Length: 477
Image (cartoon, rainbow, N blue to C red; front, side):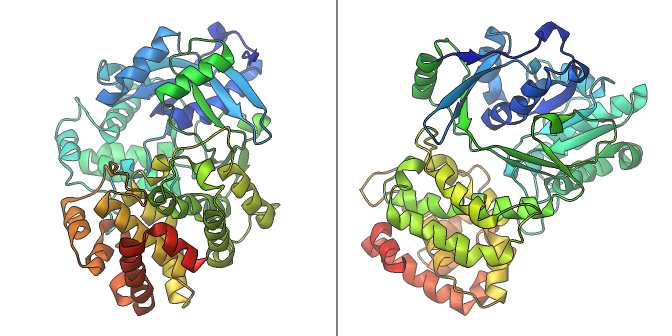
């Protein structure tokens, strides 16, 4: 299959954006849009300098550097037709473990006008109960006391901004690209709280020199396994050490609040708006919440690929009923959006055989996902005395997934929950199912006070344990 080469001379591209967290989603989404934009000569100062801050990033840094930072992106069509793009918009790659000063200097560089972030939902260091920035985290306390040798994203950005301020290098925008409601507001709260605690003078500068637009991002991008690397390279005829693949659907909506200028991303399909709330609510409440809803029951039924789970009519019915009955009443459609078409497109996207996303990826880090995707609408449903059967089934499935680590087919598995607390572990191990509802992820409402929720949840806990998730799901469809 032929590869679509990028339509610019990479020697002419300058870095105007610094991105922290060079993972698969970033390389399939922001890099894709920017790669398309750089063909315009007046936009060629918007290349992206990637920054990795974790020891575990060594492999991706080494692989990308070995091929001059270029990589292939395979876009998997729902119609079975794929496209392969060569991506060249990653102009530099700095590994903070190897050269922390280079990260700081790059943030301070006057050519950098925007810092973008994909540090995951859990990466903003917010307390699960209060949603406030956690200043008592040990790494945060170290960075507060040792500003010149940072270890966290907050410490690096603060030190970089301090140097930027001292050098008189001007204002900058910090743009979150993570799946969070009002992600710009979240980023602002996290970074400004850290900076206020470390440097009051810098905090005053940030108030008038840094903007934090909200944005909504959307493109299903699976993790790339070693088997995927072989498969993608056979298709492309390359020896790419860091290929990425994703679905054909993509969307990016951003509030137009860039204090130091921005790329003309609208030329390549990005939507700019003054308020991203309706788009965020639609995506997080329908796509992300539905992903969470289908993940644990699907995994317990023995499915490991999302497209395979979406051939199961019981799973499809569960997801569709959840969208139509539980979520749609709370999702006002954004302007020029057909909500019924959007929901049908989601079913098609989840079922895309070419993407074949991993169910384990959807299950990963539920403690960070429930507060963002599930709890806001669940609170409304409880207050409005709505039918809670599907959401209670999800909670019972999540508990079973975390507690027993064996699916309906007798297969054991490992659980990946990087932000789970010691107290959460105790609540999960308890044989009293009600204790589980005190998990840090659920703190935005006291679920123990909802008799209607407790009644159906406890029934599902018992039935899943005795009959398996497969049989219980059949009973509620």
